[in-house]
Image (cartoon, helix red, strand yellow):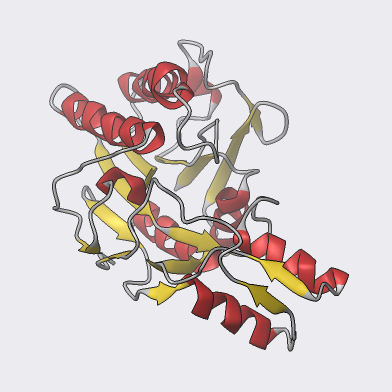
Length: 261
């Protein structure tokens, strides 16, 4: 099987590639600057599918404009670009897609979030992802292809963006900081190590699957407790300055995913 990956140089993509390398499958990486195929998905040629070597499945992780979830870029620029690229490949014969969605598609709903809940996105990023999903489902009515839509919850691990909680804490530990500024930490979230999420994405790519899934732990944990666990693992005595940052206004205080895999 030939598996192509967009966003292969990103945080999640690097973990997906590491997992794919253990499968023995042929891998094609897509990037504007590095990778086995150089391609700008904003300007795909009509023979883009052939340029990729006609893969059996595409794991589509690429998405520009993050982590600014409130930017209008997500539906003004990113959404039409993403759909045009994927439609070009599907029209040319791509038989299967695995696409990274987001828990923000659920909006401000609280509690355990099942994949069959009505979507209520409240920020441009969540709206654009939900819209792309619906566009691809409509496309399935005219073009036969498999679509696994994978809603990612809160992933963490090596290679995460410098602005992430995980990376900031690891850097603070390395520097020997005495205090770590954070929110109140009482919000309940669904956190999952990136390497486990990568395993699940690869599992979807290799399976006969045509459904929506949550990529999550299924277990709520407070942000404060998670940070304390990370500190314990590193034997760090950093003091938490709780309440330094306000709680984000684009997510509810308590939500987590119902596991689908």
